Image (cartoon, rainbow, N blue to C red):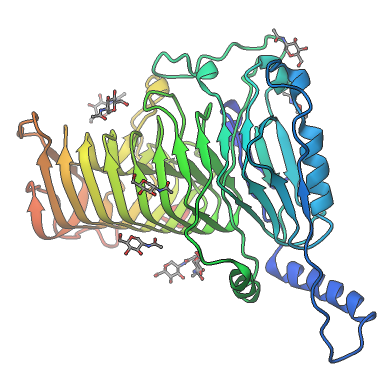
Amino acid sequence: MSCISLKRLTFMFVIACVVWCSSIGTYIARKGNYRKGRSKWNPPHKTTPKPKAPTHSIPPPSIGLKSLTCDALEPRAFQDAWSDACKVERSTVLVPPKFTFLVGPVSFSGANCQPNIVFQLDGIIIAPTDFQCWGNGSLPWLEFTYLRGGVTVQGKGILDGRGSRWWKDDGKEPKIPLNTSFQQIPPIQVIYLLQFPPTPKDRNEFSGNMPRKKPTGITIRNSPQFHLKFNHCKRVVVHVMTADSPGDSPNTDGIHLHNSQDVLIHSSNLSCGDDCIYIQSGSTNVSIFNVSCGPGHGISIGGLGRNYISKACVSNITFRNIVMHNTTNGARIKTWQGGRGSVQGVVFSNIQVSQVVRPIVINQFYCGEKHKTECRNQTAAVALSGITFEKIRGTYKDKAVDIACSDNVPCRGITLSAIELTPAPNERPRTDDTFCWQAFVEFTAPMVPPIGCLKTEKLLNNKAQSNRDVC
Ligand SMILES: *[C@@H]1O[C@H](CO)[C@@H](O)[C@H](O)[C@H]1NC(C)=O
Ligand SMILES: *[C@@H]1O[C@H](CO)[C@@H](O)[C@H](O)[C@H]1NC(C)=O
Ligand SMILES: *[C@@H]1O[C@H](CO)[C@@H](O)[C@H](O)[C@H]1NC(C)=O
Ligand SMILES: *[C@@H]1O[C@H](CO)[C@@H](O)[C@H](O)[C@H]1NC(C)=O
Ligand SMILES: *[C@@H]1O[C@H](CO)[C@@H](O)[C@H](O)[C@H]1NC(C)=O
Ligand SMILES: *[C@@H]1O[C@H](CO)[C@@H](O)[C@H](O)[C@H]1NC(C)=O
Ligand SMILES: *[C@@H]1O[C@H](CO)[C@@H](O)[C@H](O)[C@H]1NC(C)=O
Ligand SMILES: *[C@@H]1O[C@H](CO)[C@@H](O)[C@H](O)[C@H]1NC(C)=O
């Protein structure tokens, strides 16, 4: 059984992913058996010191980087180190400092792994730019899957996707030369610092062993598309990460969450050519704080509901202490017309914007740039409720607030509190600096610039939000 659902994403560069297939119960059972097996060798009531978990260092590259052909790829060395590390709990795969490795695409499967494997990235890993290295184009660059017992990717190394090769942009889509034998674009993806503390008990033990020093994190740069993607992941921690791609690189989202829950992302700097953080359907209990974003398209939930068959469900998402500079959007929720499902319980709090084109956006008429001709007016919509924007301050370039909700499924329970947005230098206030359509909004001063929205909830028992919309 595959846990990865590619669906519409197959045409994109896919996955940098942790998959947690088994339940926690399964994990505990496995661990219990393991302990029981060991206790045979130990006298009762006496704990033996744990053997030190081994480190498996990747040998220095055997082929000079002068010849950056597919022949220079060394996935074997990585895969061997990974499978050795998987044999002993808490083992480390070390990508040693001062070396540059040309690797990819490569998949690290946790299916046969002991818990808490560490991927210590201190060197540099670069992606091949040669088209032929990417096989039939369905493989991600670096992928972690089936990690039942958790993995930590850490270090101060760099993942360089060398994406400019693929961007050649016309502003819309990456111009990737199609391999005509497959009619597919080669997927390239990067992973990054994902921590996966298995159980609270283990987590305490784990942090007890960690030196309390200022963390230095991994950098992912020049990603051909998304920098880091989590799909079907639970209990994810990303921190002290840097994503660094130019503002005009197409489709290079910073961090992408899909079907993932209990996620913590903090203390990271994300510069990219698309959404800094992009949250897709199936995500719940996500907390994001102390993140800087820019250049980029801002922080975004959706586009949701493009797939009419399945419900889009997003809930309990908090963004706090976010700094955005020179981004096209600030805090944004976007849904396609005709979708099903709901977005509930979203807080955008303490967002500092400077020179952001549209700091506050809800768009229930979203229609991706490339799909303008596909979009028709429809009555169904993903229902939005319980959305708070508070302490959103700074400067904007075009529209301070842009809220456009569906006529049939208006946005409910929207709160705008302590909004202080002024035009960026050289931008003058216009009469259309705010827009609010079909949204029930509660205001708490200050509200600058002022904005008119629906105030009283008249449609409380309206049938518009039928059962088919409830997640
Ligand atoms: C397309 O991919 C196939 C299989 O990987 C490869 O043999 C072929 O050389 C590629 N074609 C081009 C034009 O790169
Ligand atoms: C591409 O290759 C992978 C494994 O190498 C295979 O699973 C997949 O089905 C292939 N896709 C296509 C479209 O040929
Ligand atoms: C992010 O940028 C700020 C300001 O340049 C810097 O102080 C901080 O260390 C950076 N954080 C990371 C994770 O690189
Ligand atoms: C803002 O971003 C745009 C697009 O990435 C870039 O061209 C421009 O130089 C940036 N401006 C500033 C002041 O950073
Ligand atoms: C939400 O996620 C955090 C970890 O980020 C976890 O500690 C907490 O228990 C989760 N809350 C719920 C209600 O599952
Ligand atoms: C979401 O938030 C609600 C209300 O605060 C809470 O009851 C629920 O447990 C949360 N769910 C998750 C998965 O965090
Ligand atoms: C987040 O930022 C705030 C304000 O700068 C700071 O007080 C707090 O310690 C930061 N939290 C973390 C986990 O870095
Ligand atoms: C959708 O509705 C809007 C507003 O009612 C209208 O201006 C627009 O022309 C319609 N579009 C289509 C494709 O019917």
